[in-house]
Length: 224
Image (cartoon, rainbow, N blue to C red; front, side):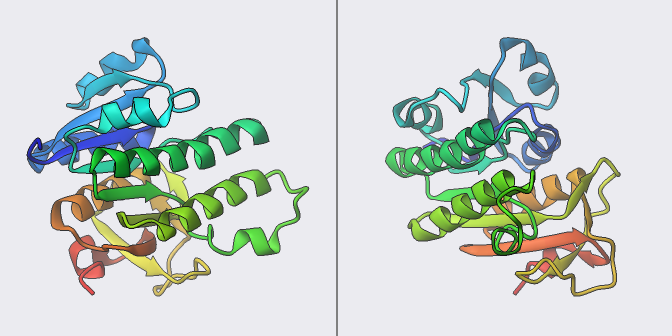
């Protein structure tokens, strides 16, 4: 098995492109799965190796081959507010195939990027709400991951921003309510820093971590 190799699903996303250099700095090699060959240059600039494999059409076997030799998989793909059908295909079905492929490939560590109210929104939103398909897909993917034997971490950031990361966060409860008096926002750069930290340290094993930008250093926040 390759030493400290991670595969990022959704490799051209903003969080993925911020995560790859942080992982590289920590000594990881990173393969990033992308939909289009023209996205390769951005991935290479982020110190990752581009692998063209569309999560919507990739089979479990395709993904298993892509995950071979990896120590960890990061699922950071998303339909980005497309049609309900595509949201289900990417955010739920793509995530589940990735979980199945990780197990088949012998990869134990699996980090998924969700959102802070994924555990509760499905119970309060109307099915007619435009946000419902996303909430449902994320809720169901997270629930499925918890049923596996994978060494998972579910990350639940708030409203994503492009602010520079501070390396400091505020944890939130299962309803997405923060423990500190902060905005319910999370910089993508901080999400990337948390991804790199939990992969490199093994912190937050089989835990859901809901968080916003805050005042507590990441390592301290995730120490328990």
